[in-house]
Image (cartoon, rainbow, N blue to C red; front, side):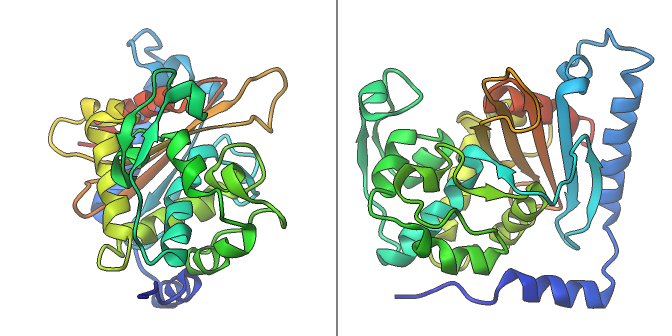
Length: 288
């Protein structure tokens, strides 16, 4: 079985030693997003969701080349582990692949009856579509024989915190709150994932992220873009920073899809991941 190679912490060490500077594209993106949010105070009626939701909005922006964090707003600490919901599914899929020779099954999603968020289900679904549509039923099936120890190679490779000892099954696919990862660590892991398309299992996952932007749970991102497309993953996770909220919506979007130069992570308090995707799309629409 082929395996992934070169842990992400070694990549960071090399990049930090070289003093990599942020690309002009990434710097321009940071300025555009900062400017757009600044306009909310002077023109709050401009119709953008991110203005009306700014008190509930947390975000961070990474330069995908240098892995430098350019912006971070409204996180108590972007390096503190929190539940990130279905954003972890891409790495759960890699862990399954490591254990099963990177051969991914087709599954029949029956909706509520098989534990999916979509009541009528997704029908017969493979890995790419399961990532694009964040199919809980597929990932319940995929993780039924996975345990926390099975995540060790992938967690080490991508610089992720390990799930709780003894965790297994759906909790390893972000269903629940047993796998806590810091927003910054997961953002950097996704940047690294986007740069490993030649390694086993990664190409299929990246195809699923692209499909998410085109017509899956992250479609609101691509709809807001005029000249490019994005790699997108959405998630909804238990809220850990405020009371009386059913959950928080998350999205990661990398732009442009074919060779990402920036990564935007957005969290919106008390909403699903699809709504976070809409706000991320509005923010990224200012970048083009």
